[in-house]
Length: 114
Length: 113
Image (cartoon, rainbow over the protein chains, first blue to last red):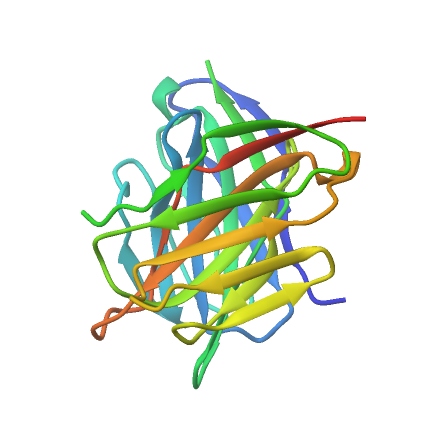
């Protein structure tokens, strides 16, 4: 089954404790991205990756890092989480080609930073 | 930055009624996507549109890519309780962009049995 997986689904942590949210896709897509979703603000892109070893900032990159060492994996790293990073996070994988453009989301990771 | 205006923000309807929602922008888009999100879950892709004027259906859902390429609408016919959720539009910008999506703020749909 074609899918995007994220782990963990839920995480409660404390300010300053480094954490990583993993993301994996089995569709062989080159383009992947991370979003955060907050009430009233909608989905905002944090980082994206056009291919292996190619990443770039989205709209709200401050406080986040990413890496893309393999095509299927795109982890999100919070080196020193702060309470304002409490949010619902989504990884997405995009099929692009010709006129086709379809973005598929993971199930989400709800992060609480105290 | 670019914005998508999605309306209405919320709808409360009776089961069996038809529903219509739309997204507009001042920017031109290459692609329109419509998603549904259930509480605590990731958005699920419903329909993808690629050409101005294109009309595409997926079961009781029908979406259209506006002729000006600046808008799109989604219709749901004969709504049922499981249609409840938040519906998002997303547009991929034209003009040689890297291909990032711009999202609407969503339409929250409630269906009364």
